[in-house]
Length: 298
Image (cartoon, rainbow, N blue to C red; front, top):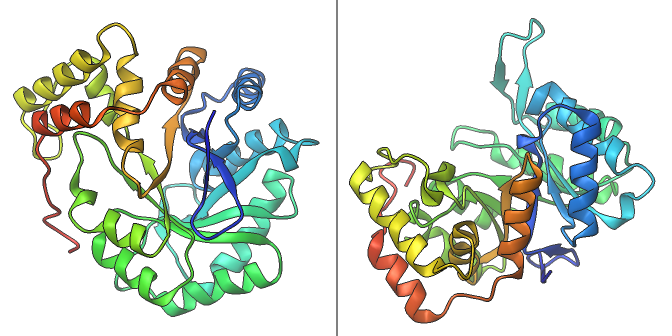
């Protein structure tokens, strides 16, 4: 496993990481899977207070109790469940963040979070107040660093200019190259780490039945999947090619992969062990799925 430094922090994270949202809810099976991942070198685990109404954090906390210092824990805040459980509302206020972090710390059974992320964001948010909350938590030692999870270029720019974020989590794949337009270069310029999610495009790059996706027709999706298969050539898994395409961009620190099964964990580990793509392979993939641009949130 290779490791990369997250932004300007001292955090070293595995270049392939574990997206905990996909865990199945069987605590024993989930714990075994999380331990297997750690034993194989995956050190970065990402969850959120939203997932399973906090149950996902509880599972992750139990799994790593007693070995907390061996992992890099990231969670997210901003989506507040309604009292009746009917859904959630967006709440990026300072008061809510300072309250929510205590609940996440309790569920995760830890005194600190390595990375605390705003789980979304809009230009209508009280951004300075939100930043104040994260800065306060950092000064108190409750979080080591903070970031945002957003695909919105206009929101990302605001946080780059006004905060000390260490990272941005965003969707990026061969079938979603929109971040290449401005966001990736901007974040690389400011040494802010990119946590890339959605690397396999909901499985569409791995042979799942093609369908229209983010402006790509089903035929275009098929072409992209065929290009991934051609680069694999029996030597690598198709997942490895899709993930390596994401990791080849210098702005990307880690590919966050949703893992639910032992087979998916093996795919993640194969991707981590695969050699970087050759420049001609990258070009071939790029030609198979031309880049698009964001039509909203510019």
